Amino acid sequence: MDSTIADKETLERDAAIGASPVERTAALDMVEPDQELMTVNFGPHHPATHGVLRLIVDLEGEVVRSVKPVVGYLHTGIEKNCEDKSYWKAIPFVERMDYLSYFFQMEAFCGCVERLLEEDIPKRAKYLRVIHLELNRIHSHLLWLGTSALDLGAMSMFWYCFRDRDRVLDLFEMSTGQRMHTRYFQVGGVMEDLPSGWAEKAAAFCAEMPSRIDQYEALLDQNEIFLRRTKNVGIVSRERMLELGVTGPLLRATGEPWDLRKVTDYLDYSDFDFQIPVGTVGDNYDRYRCRLAELRESVKIVSQALEGLPEGPYRSLNRKVALPPRDELATSMEALIHHFKLVTEGFRVPSGELYYSIEGPRGEQGCYVRSDGSSKPARVHFRDCSFINLQSLPDMCVGTYIADMIASLAMLDPILGGVDR
Amino acid sequence: MPDAPGLELIAGELNEAFAEAVLGTAHAHGQATIEVQPEPILDVLRWLRDTPGQEYTFCASVHGVDYLPQTPRFAVHYQLLNMARVERICVKALLDDPEDPEMLPAVDSCVSMFPTAEFQEREIYDFFGIEFRGHPDLRRIFMPEDYVGWPQRRDFPLGGEPVLFTHNEHKTPRWYD
Image (tube, rainbow over all chains, first blue to last red; front, side, top):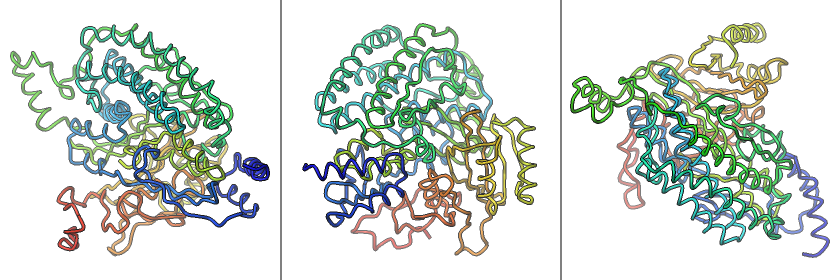
């Protein structure tokens, strides 16, 4: 790159930081374009799009002048389908939206229905949910770390992250029977108690994970290429992020310490000692640092929850909502009736509507359920964080190189199954 | 969320400022809801965002609901959030279904106030056929561009949709009728 282009690039960067795309485009328009714009279709089938995202990119040479995300290639009508399923049958549906944070979607949906039913769940169930949610966060962040590093050319990170992610999936398989899409949470608690030996295996994982995270940090943080590809790239100001409704690590990287686990009281997160990592600049490097620190905090939460796991029932004893234990079916007529009613018709939820949100790995995972008094929801809507966060992509990319757009997209961490639902 | 008297105060002040904008309030399951007329929705949202003491500056979610067979039939929900006080308030704009079947229920777009609503309003338009006046780019977002019908309305049938390929698309024209 000769020096004049470099100077122009710095000028543009300075003009661009913190400005909205409109202002930024205006600032860039003042610089006479050297070449005419070329419109490139990017995706939907491309490994770097993390799914089936299509971007329509206007390029001036290598510099991105505008980005338009086009979504919908993975739309499966899950929200509509849920309206035809009883509440307990909708759970496997909703967890298939964002296929990397299935526990979070189950919790958003089950928690919402529990609040509509005004049903409190036992303490042990809350802890079991926290353990699985945080393991899910680790799993999701590990996959993000591996694939983003891959997008930046670091092949080995991908294998290391998948190695550790597989251990989380093994834990899920042991406790829930499935590696992904587990349907482990249900209204009133969780499906099963932990099998014997699980806690030891999870504790061993938690003991080893911090050193693994140190290794990843050492691999990336001392890598000149990685640093130069991420530092001061894709900066979006905190105010703009808030306007765009962006939440999660992307917002925290700009310095806003907003985490629903701290500010709301769902699932007794106040019992655990953990911190909210925040960034300062709001560039891709901060996003990476925030997520890496979140991995450490999640490991801390899992170990604390395993240590303090209370005794007691793992799901609600209210037989109108939660299934009776299997062994009672052979001896108790009443249990058999409850089982039959719950499995055939499902429980009814009194009329009402509620928006309930939790902190997912990508931000505020919201769920809106409207009940009309029957055993099927009248409307289920998910506020998917990837869908909302994707709107900040033009702000991150306009005025940068196309290669940095790939980096920004990776650091945005969109899951297209969740975007399209 | 504001407590029940606080919610009534907000409703009262809104009614004073914008001539009977509020249709009702609800306080259930830890959620405060204000139902408003669709016409002054932008004024109501701006009032909630900018009035000192309210400052619901973060728009967490915008989504549509079909209340068939109730009237008014449609609603657009705005989930506003005050981050400093950790208070949420749900503003519901109730929309009548126009009698003319060619017409769509319409409400003003809040994209100028909350840029986050851009995709979400497109989603509501796509699924419920609610028009957002002043939206910069109101097109279908999830369904194909040439799709006919509003799939998440309650009277739109679930299932029975033939899978269209190029070899059979001419055999099933207007399958949705």
